[in-house]
Length: 105
DNA sequence: TGATTGACGTTAT
DNA sequence: AATAACGCCAATC
Image (cartoon, rainbow, N blue to C red; front, side, top):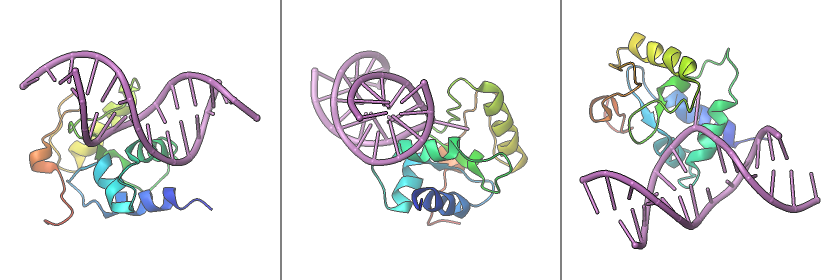
């Protein structure tokens, strides 16, 4: 069965509200530091009714990838804002502030 | 069935 | 310092 998706699911669920994590961070958590792309692929295939805060996952640049689906990115940005994360219309946020290390509260 | 792309990251130039 | 190319594994065409 698929464990990778489950692992990513658990890792994303570990991210607290008002905080964002990078793909590399998630990949490292699940034990696959060499598969940041697959993490994105899993999130891409997530259902709309998912309970996972996939919108908290951003790239190392601290910005929402969205790769063309700006509309979806906008929704994601709105969601992050609703959680207290300060994001601009470009999807850029301050990883230095909202970036979750997994060790600090 | 094989080849290409992909919510990215890292290393080299 | 910034830009370019490469690498990883899986899913999709």
